[in-house]
Each structure stands twice: as structure tokens, then as C-alpha cells.
Length: 69
Image (tube, rainbow, N blue to C red; front, side):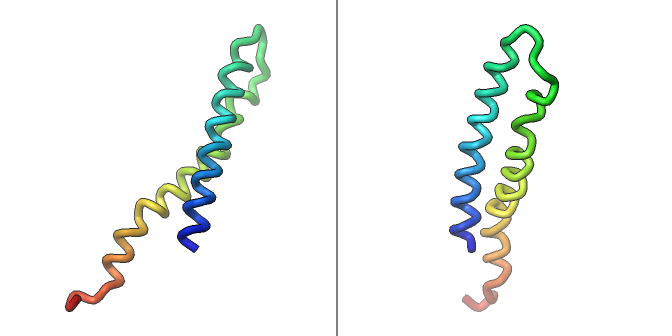
């Protein structure tokens, strides 16, 4: 499961970067639609969730071990 989350995090990061680049270029126009500003936010939210899980994973693994090891 950890491997799946890690791979998912990488793909979401790539999608996020593509969304940011698209937003950057679209906002260079004369009157871009307002929804373009919010295009990267869903990917950023998913990155926050998966990143927090991956960050906390080593701490939970340490807590699961016995103190005698």
C-alpha cells in the first residue's frame, strides 16, 4: 500500500506541475476566465494528503516496534 501511495504522489505532482504551467500561460492572456486560477487546487489538495501520509509514515513505523529491539 505504501508503494501505491508513493507512486500516486509522484503522478499527482506531475499533474500539479502541468496545471501550474497551463495556468501561467493562460493568465498571460487579456481576460482569462476566473476558474483558471483554481485549476491547480484539487491536485494540490491531493498532494497535501498523500504528502502528509508519507511524512508521518516513518514515525508510525517507529511507534509500532517494540522497545526491546
